[in-house]
Image 1: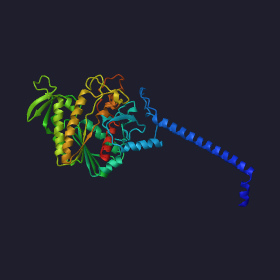
Image 2: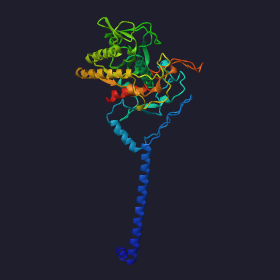
Image 3: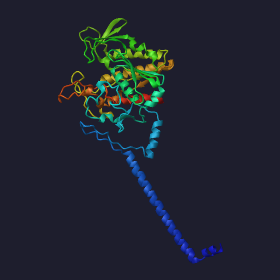
Image 4: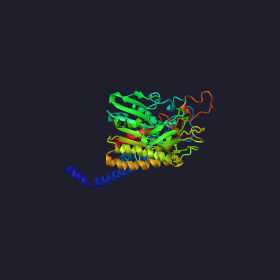
Length: 441
C-alpha cells in the first residue's frame, strides 16, 4: 500500500498518468461518437425503407402466362412498423373505407383444392390467362383486417346454422365461404332444389349447417325467365308478401346474410292488396310507372320489419348492393370487362342506380337498427359496395364459359361482369364478416 502511495506522489509518474487519462478520454469520446453515427445512420436507413415501399408495376399488360404476384416489401422485421401495426389493430375504424393492396401470399384455395366452385365462376378452369387479380387484399384505411380464420370460424359455428338469402351473388358469396372452410373440413351437400339454386351443406365434425336460399326479390314473385336471363313474360312482384321460401326457415338459422339488388331493375308488374298498383319499365301496359326504387324500398322495409320484430333473435347481416363493371354495353349488348388491376378510390364512382339502391339500403337499415335495439335483434350492415366497385378485374368476363376462344380467337361471347371469379375479390367479403362477427366492428 505504501509503495503505491509513493509512486503516485512521484511527479514523473503523475504527468504520465495524466497523459494516459487524456488518451483514454479521447479514445472513449471517439468510440461513442462512432457508435452514435452508425446507430443514427442505420435508423435513418430503416426509416426510409419503411416509409417508401416499392409499389407493384400495374401498368404492364398481363401476359397469357401465369404471372407472379405483385412484389412488395415485407415490413414484419422492423420494430417501428410493428408498433404502428399494434396501434392500428387496437383502433376502431370503418372497415369499408380503404384500398386494395398487393398480397403476395395469394388465395388460401384454388379450383384444384375446392370443388364447390360453379362452372361460371371457375375462371382458372375456364382458361383465364392472367392471375394478377388473385394477389390483392382489402385493407381498411385506419386499421388492419385479418384474413379469415376457418379453424376459428368452424369452432364458433359448432352446433349452429347459417343462411345466405338472396340472388346469385349470395350463392357466389356462399361458395367463397365453402372454399375457405373446405381447407379445414370439406362440406357435404345434403340438399339442392331442382335448378341447383338453393342448397344446404353439412360440416359433420362441427355439426354446422350452411344454406343458400335463392330468392332474388326477397318478396313473393312469379318469374318467367330461363337460366340465361331470357324472359317470356313480365315478372310479377307481390310487395306486401315476403317469399316463404326463406321466411318458413328463418327461425332455424342462427346467422343470416341477406341481400337484394339487381333483380329490381328488371321489368316487373307490382301487386299490393291483391291488386296491380303499377310497374317498373313496362311501356304499353297502361300502368303507373312507380320505378324500381319504390319496390326495393317496400321489399326492404318488409324484410327488416320481420327481422326486428321476430321473436327469433338471429344475428343478421344486411349486405349492400353489388356494382357491376360492364363497359361499352350491358350483358346482353356486348358489354365487357377486360381490366386486370383494381381501381384507386379517385378513379371511379358508382353509377346512378347503384347509388340509389345503396341510399335506400342505408336509410332502411338505420330505421331498422334503431327499432332492433329495442327488440333485442342483432343487425349489422355489410357494406361491400365501395370496395367491390374498385375491383373491375375480378369478374369472369368471357371466361364464364370453358375456353371461349379455343376455336376462334375473335369469337363474340357473352361476358359476366357482375359475378366474381373464385378465388377472387369476393373472398375478402368473408374477411369482413369474420372481423364483424369476432370483434364486433
